[in-house]
Image 1 (cartoon, one colour):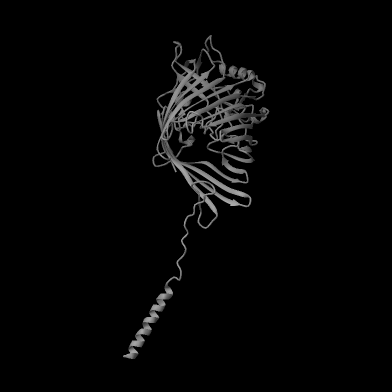
Image 2 (cartoon, rainbow, N blue to C red; image 1 turned 180 degrees about the horizontal axis):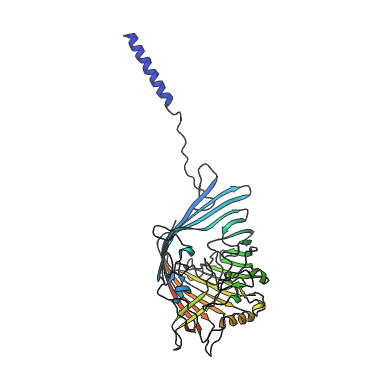
Length: 511
């Protein structure tokens, strides 16, 4: 019995020893997410690294009446015609997602920033099968179909030791860009690179809130409007094909900014090259022909712009109230005046008429950086740079912590010199039948006035309603027989100033 008991105990000890060997000696340490307070709220350390990261963005839903998405006024194409193809209502749902990383190094902070917009938009502003917004082969929103949508890249850049490399706002820009107090992405009168432009820039901090920046901007996507070779002719709305040549060099930009408790003051300047393709081009598309290279080209010219911006904070009307305003003059750099977050528009708007001999009225304005008429076609062969100037701004008032209102507006003007006007009007009038009181002047002005009211029931959730009035002041007089622009017929039209309005409703949740 004793031997039996001793053997049983020995077996139990052996089994328990084996089981003890299988148990972990010490539990692994759990890595908790640590808050990174060095760069502001929302940053945290990536576990196992010394890099801080912040995830942020917003979810936004827009609905627009008598406008395209983001409160884009109907000031050209089918919307400007007010025909039956135009979509009176547009909508967009967007998720903006941003990733911001920062790492302290012996050379300073290394920052990377990426911002993407996941969105689904009304497919087109028009149902016209010949419209570029409907034709899928020309539609930048090709994937806006049921179950679809697309991703747009806003800003993607690296920041290090005062330098920025990548797609970011221009060194020319003000902090408020084209949004002094508005929802619309189409407030004209000044510069707007809120969606970013490929660039390299450097900022130096001189202390006491004073800084200076210089940069090189890719000059094709955002910094060009159009260049007309008038020998190709002008359509009924005064526009022609773009006769710009290829990109030769970047735009050079810079600014000086003073940032104080009372507000911000800034001066900016830009230089932009205007270079034509060839003297001989075909049709309204300004397409090359086998004779183009032999015909030569105009001498390239440099244009540019200057801008002054002012933000006055905490004005006596209420806590947090402010005024933002900027003014710009440009020559050959019209994008910095007739500017949106997308391309620069030309204008062609139709309306009623008081002239019994006219079918309807029309008002138009061709937005260009310059025009030229080759010597072989009776011109001087030189590019004549277009002059533009504008201003915009907003007064922003907080009624209480939940309600706020902004009144905003802009004025933009575009001018052609005497030689450009003579060539433009000679080509436009051409063989068209015009009235005795007809006069030609391609100069035009655009005015905008709007109001927006916001309600923020809880932090970071805002509902807003915005309405905007737009006035096109054109300078043609009398009537003319104009070619058809389907569905508009070939008929006699009276030249007249035009008006339109927009309505935008938005819900936005920031995170």
